[in-house]
Image (tube, rainbow over the protein chains, first blue to last red):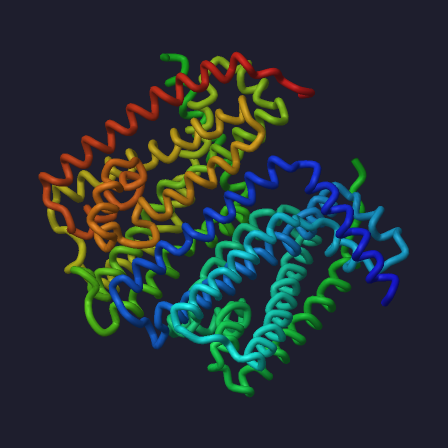
Length: 262
Length: 265
């Protein structure tokens, strides 16, 4: 365990060092993602410009969901996406050999291979949205609710990561998987809306198949103090299940890895 | 010119064969065009109690299904090939051929259309059956105009992609410039929100930008939100943009090629 923590530290340091080399890009990308966070508010503003509430969500509450979406997007694109994209590259080129040879768990190594620290801007943007939303509501979330929200944040990040592992495992079978990642982010985009807005098939898909509800709506509800204990428990169980399944699929899939010679 | 026209059938055939060869990839790309359906679900929820502006639930269904059809049929992906080939230097092979690379790219993209059409036609059927004919325009003139507007929309998409892609001759990250373009597209094309529902100044601004003519214009015409006169006027603007972007694309290419140095290859 200690060894893995140290490894994580080393990988983080390496990523930061690389990011610091490209300082101009850091500023450019940071400004760009700030612009994106604001830009993605446009549909929200239009919707709530016509209605005071949609499916039981007021503008301020929907803003909290949007905050979680921005935050999770930062997590996805800063900590999950970069390393797992490089796994796909490894599999395609056959260089995964070098990872497998190292004396540490392969899933851990590939998952921590690369971070993009400037995505912190997104996380800060999400926090700023929380501040704005709660300021408009004229109240402060209680410490218990913040704790619950943090616990769900861990669940959400874990689910997101597990889903990504599942996607990457597909790369062992169908080599061209970069467009699968594109598909994934296009689906993730729907997470900016509270899941109760959707009905019928969409609700089922977004709650159970691709649990967007778990990633943004439930943490937002927790922060607002509206999440009941049962749902929270189910969220934790769901995240754990996703983690277990993805680990199982990963170990199975890696058995199918046949190194490519160039 | 004549040589290019003679080469067209072969180019299209090759492009179609490629599209068929990568059909799984193709399907994933199609599936990732799910945004209109998500927005449809959202706007239906908003319009559940009362219509928004002149949009009721049925109008939203018609609008976003039509948007999906238009989006599927006007897709282009030349920018990814272009930036990749410029960076890798493999563009050199294209330059050796006696046709303009832009024509070759256009053929590759167009040749995939039959496959796209096969996949998006069921959507058209769903559109017709669920929304009924009431929401679609009955004017035969406007219906005849629809393919022309689609072609215009596709040309704007393709040419804009070529121009942004040609930036790769100058800078490394043409991709992020295109991201900005896509962001503007999302808002000003009516892809996420029907343009009418914006505040009036934003609607007016959208009329002056090319994005509207890539999506909202054909869609609004198809679901009968526009009179003949308006449609003709907008068609003129659309093709003005096509001409403008076409001239721009050719110019940028000529300038960019001077800087092109094939690496490796």
